[in-house]
Image (cartoon, one colour):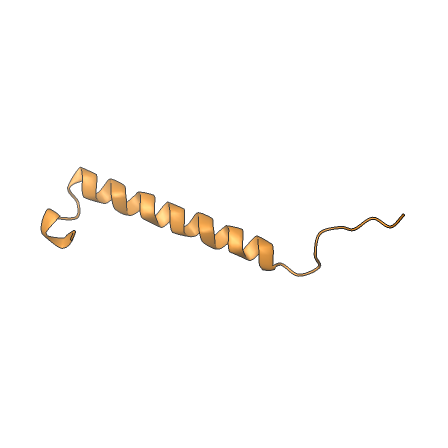
Length: 44
């Protein structure tokens, strides 16, 4: 039997990192809006 390991490229890992980065940015923006740092007029 041959065992198959993870793919040699890092495409999957990069996609996960980009997803986490987008999540963190979104949460930071949400916190800034809720705390009033970003005025309500700037939020559509």
